[in-house]
Length: 362
Image (cartoon, rainbow, N blue to C red):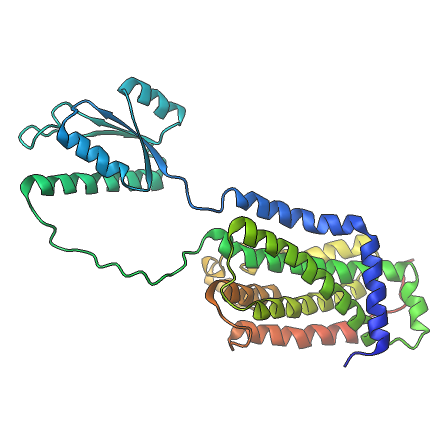
């Protein structure tokens, strides 16, 4: 399938890359910083801090505080009103519940005062809902009323999805695209400028041998770099790849092939390093925005959905996310896998058909 000449060129391209230590470091720097940032914020949300001032000090108020304290969403602190008011203003607690002196028995019950920042919509709704539930529970005990309905909860062992679970496949696909296009498009322009391609043109090497060799070399490089980032995410953020690693890495390899071929095409259009940068930006930036790498395509206006789903990065991101989060396989036939197949043939045809050996900017 592969010739000795292609393997020999692959080894040469690997040696060229390994000599450029700066490129190795910087190609990993951004993703690792990105993953490191989420290692501090990608876990379970911190409990909401509540302050409670108990002026009644009655059995009912004690039970109410116990009910609030058993809720895992809250971290309850008891204390004097003046101290807790200051903590609330300083932001040390999110809400303050003041239990009045008349909160003693059912004949003298009074309302509760809750002080909070209403601009914190999500937290204020959670706090109010929990307080109401606790008060209803106390009311039932006082009136000796049993709940009309009960919940039968069956654990189906479903895995809740965090944003980092959604983000990681998109981040890996984003890395894949940048590493591949940089490894083909920018390098081709530099090889052409230095006359390397011109000298290769007089050898028996054909465009397909050159392209296949650099594709093999860059695939090994991309797999290694993405494995480092994926390994850090698994150990630091407790990421779990639900599907098979074979399907996951096969998708990465196919995506790498697509974007390497696209890089070759862009490298044939541009004649200088300055000229290829805006061309690459014109191709990659819309894909970053529209591919669903960092937020779902479904959240975009419906009018651009056909364009978004037709992009090569969209197909790679969707398949990676389906494998990682839903346990799908690469061989599950859907529009995303079909898109990958189409882009494999289309990108390879364009790269080999319009590849330029000799043109050099003057």
